[in-house]
Image (cartoon, rainbow, N blue to C red; front, side, top):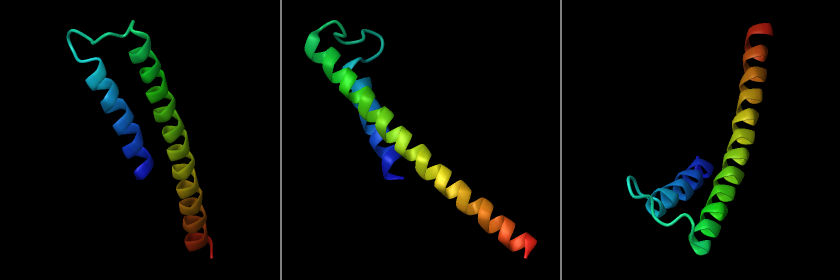
Length: 70
């Protein structure tokens, strides 16, 4: 799903910004603001992805009920 690729892309950029073990510069305003943007992007894509999965689940439930009840 494209939405989860967006989540992975945002979180991967965060990983590069704050590498283990030295962690980058999270106190710098530019890095801090970029990290916040990335987290919001990841959250937005994740929420949209869950909505798509819920639609798929509803479709599957309806199909399953239709096949076995009729």
